[in-house]
Length: 497
Image 1 (cartoon, rainbow, N blue to C red):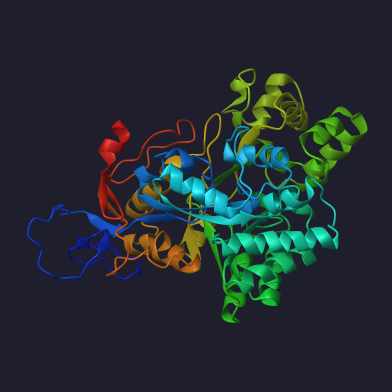
Image 2: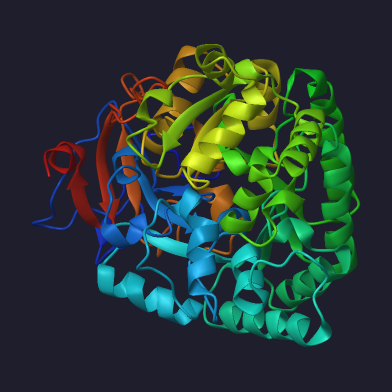
């Protein structure tokens, strides 16, 4: 059964692969061809993870995504990219290591340098990279969060333009992460203007997904309106129980903009929980100057009190919805898998003080899972015609979110087959043809003649994720074959290897 990436109903047929490309449909099978019997299976384009944070791990040939059927990844999301480092390589690594799970030896001066490293590493996936705003800002100005002078603004525009010309797929912002959170509207307009001129895409982790979700969407739609850039809103959701009613209005805002001609879409992952660095809980002014400046503020009783007051006032989650997933040291390994509410009770502290002490002890290297949204809103978002489905997965020194190991089998198994949330062909479109169109990937995403033969074959009866919040590092089941450029890789061989 062919799911060709268009969303059209499944149909029976054969796929011919010639010299790494999809060949002529309905032709006789050439003599001597290798035959893969896909009876009872679904043949689909290779899955595209359009929102990934595997910027460093793709260089290592990690297999977690390939085991799920992923053959292409878009990295550089949420304002984090592995380039440009400028004169601030150390600050770039300190900024991004919580998302990249990196050490001290990475960093590139340009998109061209990063792409050269990818070619040398022979990455298993085809990698498409966004230029991260936070990385770009640090390369030019370090960890400052105020409005930048004209010379530095011009330097950012030039560096962004160069990266896009060198093959970067687009530009991303992380407006809840310092220093990008300090960027004024005018700065974003100028950078989105560069993106629009080169016909690339702008992806945004907005300023807020909780109490100010609607205002955050308004800001991004206005940027697209003014600059003409193609807008992709990252991991759309309404965070926290008090904000769940905002989700429907958020979708209406996006739909209204789309109808009047704004080129806007969004993505979301198929889980109610998200994952991030714990410093995102803090008011972002507290992070200006980097980790040493933050630790100095936390050591000052007055500053600590101010940070606590603002953090609690802005939190949409309860302490019981925030769970430690990774820490940098063995000394605090016992905190992994516990909520901040539990840790407060165990330590005899207020949860806010647990946050501050852990950040101090781990020099900021703490990751959390956040149980953000309702299943009703999740189902509505995933099914929306403007939604792409993504993993947003990243590696940690502890327990990763199960989406790193299970996103696409979870979608096709649990949500499509078991719960009936959408049809297989609709789900396949949201992870193949639609992201290929949005991100300008011209030769992948569809089973069409002349397209690169990136193909995923799965058993619709058995495909499932085995990854759980308690035990996430488990390979999925039901992915039978993954073809990359016509070369077949058996999932069983990958597990063994």
